[in-house]
Amino acid sequence: VALHFTWQKDWAGVKQVLPMIESLLIPFGVRPHWGKLFTLSPRNLQMQYEQLADFRLLLKQYDPHGKFRNGFLDTYLYL
Image (cartoon, rainbow, N blue to C red; front, side):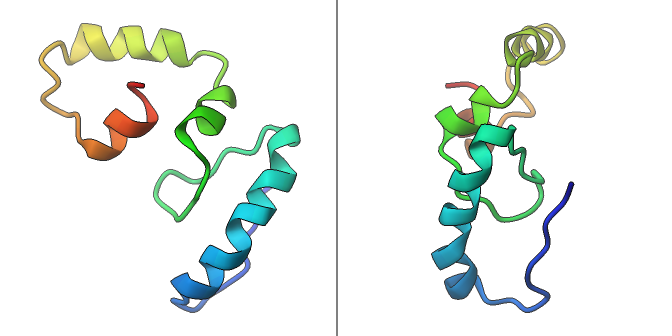
């Protein structure tokens, strides 16, 4: 299921309701679109991916020097 509730660029308005919507959806395994706006904490986001540890091993294997890492990925995947 995907939720899309605005077609206008209104980050101020979205920022007010998005945390509430996300917190209500956490018990259902909410997974945000990685290319869209979300406010989930890294911890809450990581809890939604059961195989994140396996994915981290793949990242170490195929990108051992972190060439493709950035601040966003460091925050949400590498904590």
